[in-house]
Length: 446
Image 1 (tube, rainbow, N blue to C red):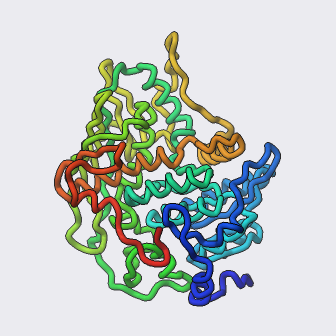
Image 2 (tube, rainbow, N blue to C red; image 1 turned 60 degrees about the horizontal axis):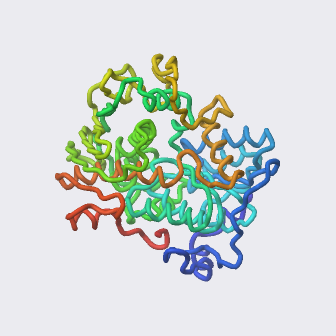
Image 3 (cartoon, rainbow, N blue to C red; image 1 turned 120 degrees about the horizontal axis):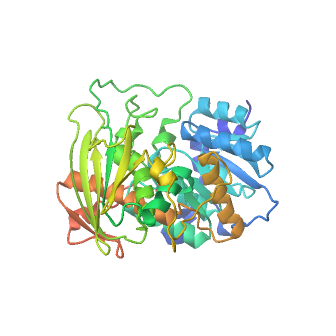
């Protein structure tokens, strides 16, 4: 596989790149001069989207599989794949039929022919890569959680709006049948007024058998994997796939699956605009090894007008039969949703629910049976129709991620937090407000 874009040394790229980095919108760096940035496109009904994948391991492999199907249907063209792991990159390039391969995502964003990017990198990269992609006029599909800090999420929303692009976040239940059946039933009174929603989820792992630092595996650009994180030596407890158990890069189960479950719950409760709440969390943090996210955790969120409570239990009270899920507790009974409404169907009573006279339908898209395909089709639809607000628009996902991030912050600080969603700040707590952002390592920061 001969690709000079890949083989070019990072030192050379950064030296060359120094001539094209400058101040962009919101004081964020642009990657190329504004005069050569393409305006965000709205392809016609028969036009193909030109697609690039950034991060092709794990969920990125599912995204590539979906895009290959869209490509077979004549709806997209896969132009590029990108990963800082050469082994994953080569495998993805072969699957994609010879698409251009890049180790550094900034090469992808410099290409004016690319309309859309799918980002499936570790969580600490989501905000930086999304903002930069928006600034170059590209529509974005990014994995959940949207961000690892509140201020990152704000930057993502601002970049999407300023550059008039569609940013869909991969919390697929809002375009899946299980989520739709449950949302429709809850909003139309299947259990009456819902006053509390509880979640159960299995515990996070602990690093009980630490391993020493070592050289990174062959083919992995460790500096690029770290990106905005502080520099540290490679360790197998960080990568591969273990970033989830580090607060700075993954945030534990609440930021991972919580991003799914909370998104579905907010939708069912019609609470996307209830942006203010209180949060109080407790948990047990490991004292050994490198992983520092809570093993067990209990978080209580209180919303007002209308009043209702959301509880995250890790492990919590397992009402259903599967590994995780949630329960809507209403005045007239309860309704269980296993998982989050994507990978599992709704409970039979929700599926069989009969709409009452005067009931209100909720948004549904069912272009594909596969909910991952459906979620991407919804993203494409928002671009073609020009409204640029897909089912899990970045603003919705930012608010969901804020619940997760503030849950972790309350646990770390050991106190209740009062969140003012209008001002995007914690009321009367200067220390906590300083922790809504964090430094990022040059040149990968916002």
